[in-house]
Image 1 (cartoon, one colour):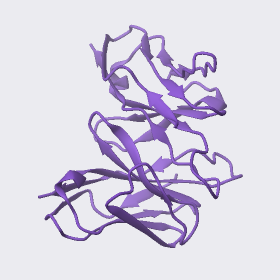
Image 2 (image 1 turned 45 degrees about the vertical axis):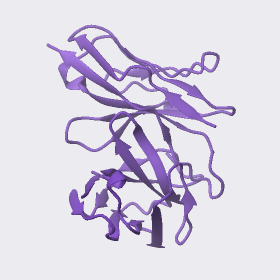
Image 3 (image 1 turned 90 degrees about the vertical axis):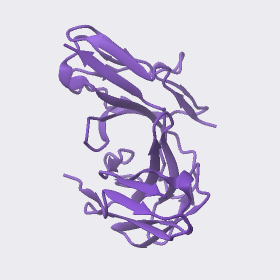
Image 4 (image 1 turned 90 degrees about the horizontal axis):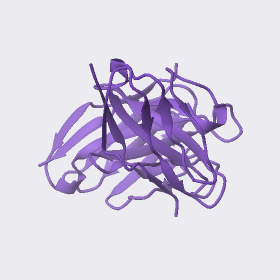
Length: 114
Length: 116
C-alpha cells in the first residue's frame, strides 16, 4: 500500500531562517510527488510537483528515490509562508481510466515567527 | 483559471438525514474527486470518477455514494448522515490521462458539514 509520512505536525521558525518540511513515502513503483499548500481561509492549491523541477515562491523539493523522500525547502522563510503544507503521492493505486486519487500526508502546520 | 465550486460552504444536518454535496468544475476535466479533511488525519479519498457515470472507491467509501451524470458535476451523497461524518469535504478535479498537467488536482473551497 502507498503511504505518505510527514513527521512534523507543527514547525515554527523565525523569519529569515531556512525551512525544511519533511516528507517520506512508501510506494513500490515510480511515484508522482506533490506539495500542496493551504493558506488561512483559502482553498488547497498546488505548490509544486517533482516532475516539473521548478521553484515556486522560493520553495524547492527534490525527489530522492534512495531515501524515498521529497522534502520541501526554502532558504529564507517569510511570514506569508505560514500555512498548512501537505505532501501527496500519485502512483496509479486505483484501477481504470488513468485517474489517480492522491494519497496525502497528514500535513505540517508551518508558522513563521516575526 | 480552473474553477471548482461547491454548493455550500457550511451545512448543518441531523443524524439520519440524506445529504447531498455538489461540486461543479468549468474546465472540462475528465477526473473528479471527493476527499474529507480532518485535523491530524490530512485528506482522505472517498470516491473518484474518471468519466461520466463511472466511479471508483477511494480509501474510505463506507457511508458514502457518488453520482456523476454530467461531466462537469460530481455529487457526494451521505445516505444516512452520522455524527462521525462531521468534517470538511473537498472536491477536486484533474485534466485526465494523456493531457497536459494530467495529475495536478484543483480543489474547491470545501464544505464544512456538521451532523448533529
